[in-house]
Amino acid sequence: MDTHAKPAALNYMQRMREYYLALGYNNPYQWASFTDVPFQPLSKPVAESCVGLITTAAPFKPNAGDQGPGAPYNAAAKFYRVYAGESQSDDILGISHVSYDRAYTSAEDINSYFPLQALREANQGGQIGGLSPRYYGLPTNRSQPTTMDQDCPELLALLQEDEVDLAILVAN
Image (cartoon, one colour):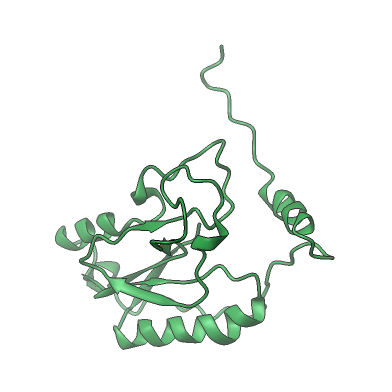
């Protein structure tokens, strides 16, 4: 057996198109594209910057069924509005509400989809200038207008309120 063989690539974009067609949408999913991107270079080094974590992981909902590691897809666990949690809290977040390939990965390690502990350690070790007081949840709505007109402005307002210099998005 060749131990250096590369695993087969997952054609995720085609799989997502097929998934949306299977959901009953009449056209394949269209990814947003922009000619002007509102990003800008950092004005100071990372070691002096306040870092915020943005996640698409969902807060635990007590009456929404199985949301634990390895749970099947669970639409009841989905969330639809931007939220924030305390960066020093060990909140229970999950990814049962998103379509990820459960045959090849799991949600056993929360740090793989919500690396807040790593950011805390980077803060304590001086690799970042500070950790924002909150982390931020961004929903995975299937509506680009909702994302652009509602979710992004709400998220930006929270980041600005917390004086975040740079944000890391961990999209699930």
